[in-house]
Structures are given as structure tokens and as C-alpha cells.
Image 1: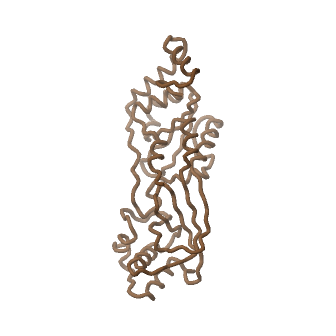
Image 2: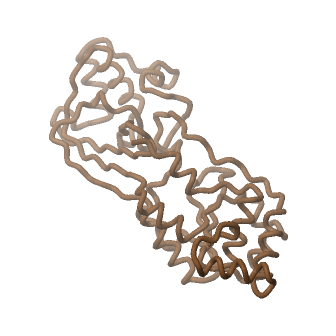
Image 3: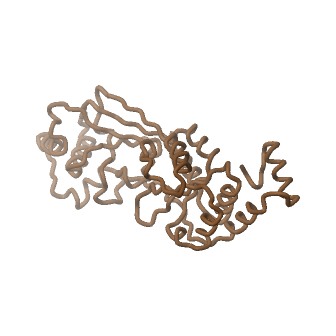
Length: 291
């Protein structure tokens, strides 16, 4: 539902009734108060062209989102929001008979550093200074540190996501310096390095995004909002349905506020917050998609 652009006959009649002062005074007051809020909204971070999977939003968490990840006063409201959120991301698993490891250019494990856009940059950094690869024998020794079963031909675990473009990430958790150095060496020397692979590909599902956008305002709220008396008064005093989700998991990151559009006063709050500067999370997600 939109306060400014009603599209159905029912909404047009509702808008007319509001203008005549018959209904909707509470919604109009909520919209006015919300749009006047002065909260420290921040633009959601632009994607980082990084070798680290965890330096960008972890949207794959939505796929198997625990029910307890959402907070809010009413269980049914949280359950409905959870159902919509878990449709946003989908995954496909492939068993690859032969994958060239030179195509890998990222780590899907936790980042121990930051600021590197390629394995070549990382291999040339101070983090990898103890690794020297001069010969093919050195290469085998180094890559076997990261992949102890490399010579046995065991499958390698891989990750992709359409919000990370064409990058392929290795899901190993140890000896990242050795792995990056070996892959960089293989590229320089033109070495074909083939292994079977287990590839999990995540993608933002446009149908799921459309469904969520039809049903909810999803807004990024700064941490300060939850202790702001004006905002909390709007949210709680009118007993509005809502759910909260902390997904980004980094210091200072905003929480997502989900407000159901089927509820007029929740819609009024959502549109007012957008007017006040709250970032639209779904618009942000759509911008991340790289086909």
C-alpha cells in the first residue's frame, strides 16, 4: 500500500476517505512524525572488489535463516517475515568433474586481513613473504599445504554468488597464504591445475525479491534508532507489527526493519522513515546483482 500513489479501487476509496477526514488520521500522524525524524541514517556499503567473501554482505544467510534470527514482540509477525526473507536467496550445487584452480580468486573463509583485490596482490604482500615458489616442486609442496590431498585428486570446495559477479571462492579454512601464492604462480607460469570441484552457487532470486517488496518495507536502521525515544514511541506506542533482523554482522552495521505493507499504520511508518532518509534494503540488494 502507498500513501501517495494508491493504485487499486480500494486504495483510491481509502485515500478519498482520508482526505475527507473519515479515517486514517492515525496513519497520517505516524507518517508526519516518522518523516520528521533525525536519525543518523547511513548509505549501505558499496560492494568491495575483494578476495574475501566475508567483506561483502552475507546474503546467503537468508537461505537458511534461523527463525530465532528475527526479533520483535509478536511471534506471528516474525514468522511471516521469516517466510518472505527465506525466499530471497536460492542455491544450486554442482559436482564438477574438472575445474581449473587458476579460476579461483577469493577465499570463502573468514578474512584475516583486508584490502586485496587479487591473489597476485596478496601473494606479493608481507603476509606471504615466507613463501617462495621457484620450481614446480616448490609449487606442489606449497599447494599441498593448503590442499593436503591435492596429489590424490580430492575435490575442492567452491563458492559463487551473483552479488559477487564472476568471482569463484575457495572454501578452505587453512593455509590461505600458501593457496594464494600457489594459484598466482600457476597463472604466471601457465600451469593447468585441475581438480574435481563441489560448487555451491548462490543467487538473489528476483521473484523472491518482488514478493518481499510487495509485502514489506525493508529499511536499514542505525543502531541509535533503538534507543531514540521518538522512533521507539512511534514503533511501540501504536503496537505496530514489525520484525528486526541483524544480517550484516559488522561493527556499526544497521539492522533491517521489516514493516508489513498490509497494515496501514506500519506502511505509514515505513514511508515516513524512507522520507526521513532510511535506506531501502531491497533496492540495495537489486543493485548488487551481477548477471
